[in-house]
Image 1 (cartoon, one colour):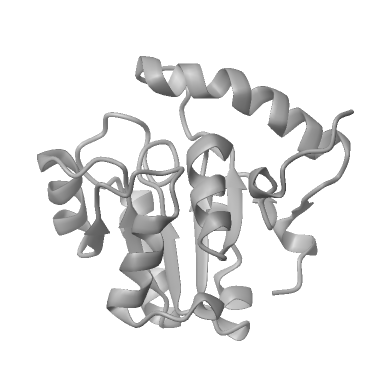
Image 2 (cartoon, rainbow, N blue to C red; image 1 turned 90 degrees about the vertical axis):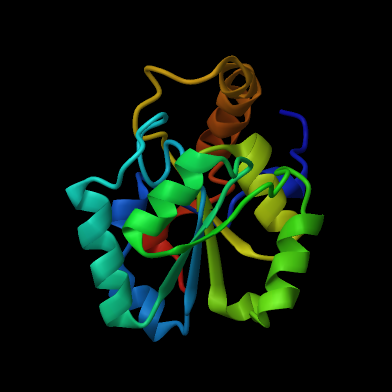
Amino acid sequence: MKRMNARNIPFALCPNIYALDLQKLQKAGIRFLLSDLDNTLLPYGASEPDQRAIAFKAELDKMGIRLIICSNGFGKRVRRFASLLGVEAAGFMRKPFSGPLKRFLKQKGIAKEEVLFIGDQIQTDVRAGNGAGLRTILTEPLDPSYEPIWTKFNRIFDRKKRKAIYDSHLAKPMEEINL
């Protein structure tokens, strides 16, 4: 196997955002969970938070962890979803580029050590988070049955990289990671 670019390798793997051990995050000093929206926090195309997202956000609040949506989009749908869930949304993040993410963290005064970045795509989420010096968590997509053409295109490359990560144990499951 060819050596994989380090920007493609997540800090840890997790089946989905809802499987995170929030007590573990709290004990490790995580104060901010930056999350991709589509197929990470909700299935692609959903316009409102479901009960699972609402309960998850409530648990994060209890733990003192602030959820922030980091999306490449920032249309009405993203803003509406964030508003309904009661979270901030950082849009037009231009993932996989890390510059907008770095600027957002600096503008908000957020220390990298207090952040986990979670998403379902290596090509966008993992690369942007790693490029910004954050610990990234790669999830499986919540519902890959419907995705836009550009995401389907990214998944072609994603599948190969994901297989290499799993086969070579380049990243460990979240439950095996010490933060």
